[in-house]
Image 1 (spheres, rainbow, N blue to C red):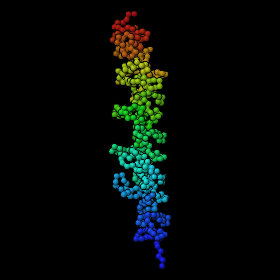
Image 2: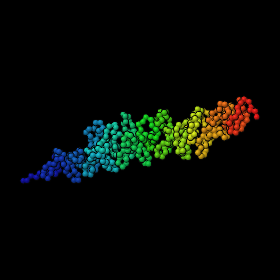
Image 3: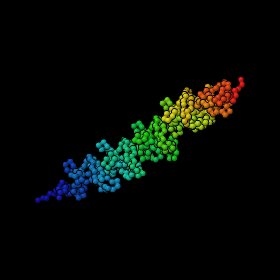
Image 4: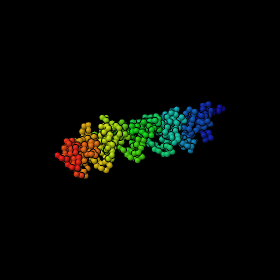
Length: 464
């Protein structure tokens, strides 16, 4: 009688084995049953609930021993509990049963509409991922060098668009905004620490540093290391969760520390205006919504009474003199005497800032003064100089004190000590022309010529 060796699948001692056509038990290979594939391990026993490494690819067999296809499997991590090690790693097995894995650099696979990356052993990458070698970056500073963000250990899907992430910086918990390019998932970041990357997102401009952190507030777009900087190096990016660059328009904020440390330390807010390119107006007189505004060298809108030297292009040259006390008027006139391009302007008070025309009553250090500013042409907004009917010096009406009735002033607005040679004005600033023996409150007499210049001053009336 002939004996026939067993072939195919056999159950032995409660375990499944497989014999080939020659009757030999197979090991380290796949065998099929129905529509499913099963793996026979090194002992020739069918494997169950196990990750299979055949030396080239990774597979997984379920509790029934069948090869898993088109699905996710979480495999227990033997290093769980160690620093930065998850409890389990996720794998995705394709239709042919092979796990997705990288071949060097990060390559993302689309699964159910989301993007995932895997390392060279088929483990799903999560957290911060390096593009060059498809590895997960760990440690508190992983966010600084990572190219992609792929959620936590149970997510793994590649971030796209805006994400606010919690990170650790200098041993402190921080929350920063990052932007991940929707086309490739890579975070926007500057090439190095010497500059910021300016990116347009949904028609708005944003700045990112070399770690990919969205900048807000005053940002030194030239990345200057100097302790003191100028406003030309800065652009303003809206604070908080907004971050977009002020392209054009007004903003009232605390100045940058390196530009105006005093205001920064005092938390004092100032008005600024961006020109349409994100650059802040500075040292200039500008027309905004049909009104004139002036900005100092720090880019701050000014208000109040100022003596300025403004050229034909609107550029403010030289010293800006704020007339905020009586002595500053003399300083302004001295500047005007040296350079006739100086003129006095009034930009309202507080948050106003718009240059004024016509007659204005202005409070200077608690005292009210009457001023007159040009209304048309080249002299518009400038303080009027006049010696015709009214004595106006840099716009200020030079009046006699009501206690004196009449006083004699020079073209600089200062009272003439000897009286003779100055313009004689009354308490309304009107020039007294062709007058004979006008008597002031002290009983002193004045005579003036056709221009109102004092020709006689004495305690007795001049004989006719």
